[in-house]
Image (cartoon, rainbow, N blue to C red):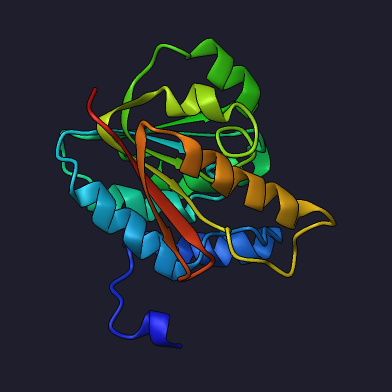
Length: 194
């Protein structure tokens, strides 16, 4: 596949990928998306990063690969079984904090926090509590979402939710938005300086 041509994978990626398949987790981010996450992470030296939806840590490994030693990544998920895979292969990285918590609970408990980069890969921060999560962006920060192009595993009515989400993002005057028909459909927004 073209996405795999000359692609350098993070050190832990292959082991996480094998454990992910063994665990039956099928919602992992595409390699092309992960590569972009790594590149964008490298643009924020010393940055504070948030990943909503760790899964098994595949995308987490790419974000860490792009970060410098002064940056930090907080990644949350509500599924302890899958989060344990991320802990097993990435838990020794002192730049990473993994939390097992419901997305809604975490967002509502951390309203005042600010980040340089948010990858929202779960319902909260994407389809739910969107405004609260966008308010966590520092000026110049990235907000990144994927799976915006139709997917085979989408339930009935999900396409309409994705369309409404895009329209909501387009209407915000505090964001500069780029929509990409690439990988699974990526949207990158940057928070405008006030």
